[in-house]
Length: 454
Ligand code: BG6
Image (tube, rainbow, N blue to C red; front, top):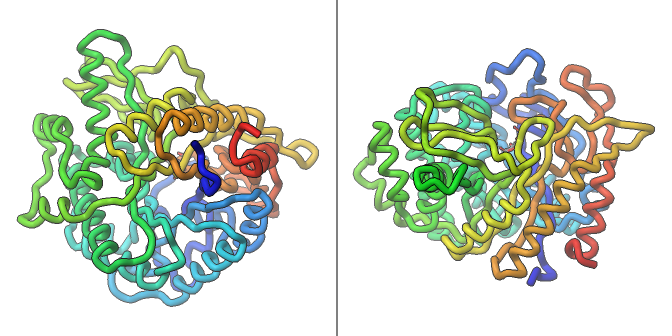
């Protein structure tokens, strides 16, 4: 049964919504310096939430949000990633978080959402083990400063997509070996931070936030079923077995060894992974993926949902039973239920959905945005989630992407997700006016009723 204190929320991330890219002592992040496609806006102004957060939170309150998932920009707090702390950065999030709490909205905070400080990247980024300590120090500052005000901390957003879809979300392609060594350092950093959080008895709970897409076999052919199991292990379970069980998933290890990408462990790493565990699982869900056994000679490289192939293991296939968004992402509400059940059976920890939504080219007509396609997507996903809860899965919150329009990871301002429209385009900032979409009114009703059943 869905509880009365179910966290109906919505989500954003710092670099995609804030703007104020170089204000009040903020350092540059990898997002500020990455090379973007020519037709795509940079992140300098984004939705200008940095200057308009009060107006935005008033809208979130009107929407009835019980929770708001935001991320803190590492470079506002520690501009160079390591060392000096920027008090003005802490002051900004003090105001933002206090404003949310005053509005009766629970802040859910991601500490790192794709925006590694550029100064750390210059020193080798996650390939350099010093980044592990930099991350732990940064989190320590946050935990001390915000202790008591944040009940739910999320460590790293979509670590699996930073590894598997690095060219889409970070704009840089690396070898498998580099990627999985960096991945290992992130896993160690996350474990260190989880241990630190628990050892110091900070109030609240901490969890990871991967992108989970259950992997379907393209057919019932045994080779395809095995391919799907392998991809599930590498894409999904690798990233949850570590924070839940303190060790790598054995099928993922097998693949990493065979592709010569098994990371090197420093002497204490296995112990650190054992010691740092999560309290709950946060996950982002957009769609399932489908694979067959590998046939072609070459692998492909997709974005977060477009699928992946790995020679000798699996090959991405489209699912003929699913519709797609206008940006080519498959839509699979029943797959959402499958994913929830699979997560709960594997890990038996409380779950929170920290992203789910539909990117579309919204149009303003007579001052209104009739985003029926988004309502349809969200309604079907809410229904499947409610059924999963009814059937016994423990899901304590749902935060669709996104609370308000913001810049997509690699498709600019033309791909919108918000309940609130922001009046700008990729290269024309216009007046950045906020307009409530039809989905705003739909979601408000869902929240008021505590679900789709009145
Ligand atoms: C997730 C990310 O991958 O999906 C978000 O956590 C992102 O940052 C969202 O915006 C939607 O993806 P995209 O590529 O359409 O912006």
